[in-house]
Length: 283
Image (tube, rainbow, N blue to C red):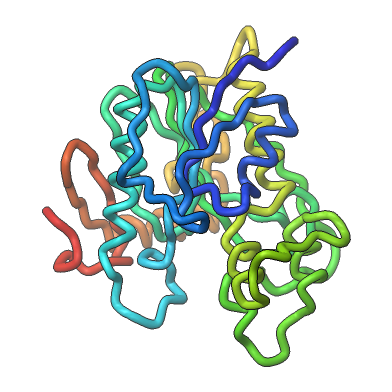
């Protein structure tokens, strides 16, 4: 079957998230990108042109590792992502970020939230990524997890290039699932690490895009109407009277309930779990 899905990529960076979709047959078009001097805030697209939208808005404001106060740009660019989703009237979207990112609610879309690490797809790098998949028809992705057996490597981060004792750039790239010899000759060394570290592991991108393609082409897809997901937001299936998938999920759900703040701006609702103080957002 030919995959005729035309996908718009926002905040694509060097295209690591895009690569998984391209390998699964999606046709990916990249919006203006900051690394190339573009600004998504000036971008508009025609209604009905793209069937899907993918992207990872800047995560620094939502990261638990940040050392400075949030700038507000994170929420602003989340809003731009949502604006383009609504403007395009796409059938589905995928937003990638850190686990502390707000939970989006966009009119007309049912949203599945889940976390995924390279460890969950058989690779030794441990950085956890958070995804929110929205569709008009309530599709649910069936992510196939295959835990890594062995000693995990510390996670890849965008700031490693400026650290003493950093791993070699080739090792760094390989931990992101990139091929041997991968390089970005047009960038200086610190910028190379930042560009690769900001991306999604190749195997994670491939698994998520595979699951999306499966959901879109299946004759009997999983949906919110015939399936039940863990209440913690991890994206795992639960059955019968189960509310959460495991003990870790129960703890996560408890923390989420304790720190829940609801923030509204424009026509998007975000649930902030204590990552940003209310004074930094528009209520």
